[in-house]
Length: 165
Image: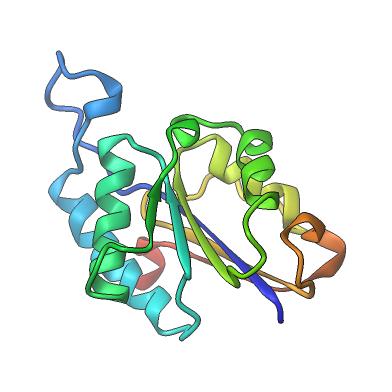
């Protein structure tokens, strides 16, 4: 069976509360709207995540909850990863490659620049920036997360909210 990795940038965050720590920053209204829109788009692929890794920052966690609500109507597949808050591509890749192989489809909710850098590690072209609520879906011809690589990537999709307007 193939492995599918879905890299998702958190929804648009609200910067209006100056004294709020970065970690606690919530989503803007548009962040909620875009997350629902993109969750519906991801659902159309009909290969839903078996597991979701998310940064614990409010904006990433809330985005993962919205996606879970749309995709599964529950939150049991979410695993909060403290190490994904502002993680580098290398840090996330290390965790992903150590994912249990019974997981076929894995979604990761995180932040830039790490999430875009990780997508660019695999893609044959360069993305300047995964927009908020955007996702990159990568399918690999392997049964082992440790072996995911651009050489065995067989399918890729990149989508984001303004692409739907």
